[in-house]
Length: 270
Image (cartoon, rainbow, N blue to C red; front, side, top):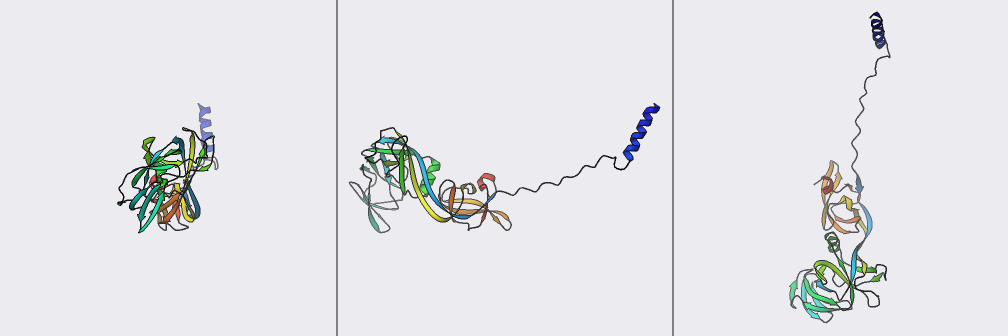
């Protein structure tokens, strides 16, 4: 008993000696809040090319549409006459196609993209179904040219479009598709798989942002812009896109700072 008391007394004296007490717990400062990811509006050049999976078909049938709001003056053997903005022009069909049926009477006023006739191919064509996401990109631009490549076969080659916006037609009238005419000197067989590359626009030295920064892909959108008071929602007008970068035609200036990701992805500025 005496020995235990002695050791307890020694332990108590050691605890009272300077430098022998347990160190006090240190309060670690909280790390600063992470800065949000951001990007600066800058000028660049954009070439918008939409790549579609296609199939070789024989004598494809498709619907053609009015190129603008105007009047269908009349039909000819290889096209139609169309009046818009006080000017009448002849719209000709691609080679190896023929007018199959008229969907509007001559003299009728129509809206842009209104179906006016069906056209049948007289040889081979490529038919490329278009999904909703791709449809937006095609409508946002103007289809300036089409190249095609047969998988493990001939190409690339120019493949003139029959319809300049996706429309329904044989052999699958239930879906929207682009149809182009395979040149007569390109050897193909029905059912071959192909790739169709459609150029929908080209812009040089335009304001742009990564598509990740913009809520919306065609027409109009929204971004979260940095201001003197913090972050603010900003509507923008959009031009063409190549799927990575989108053209900004209004709503922002060069050098503006925009938050990533887009407001509909993180809830900021919505």
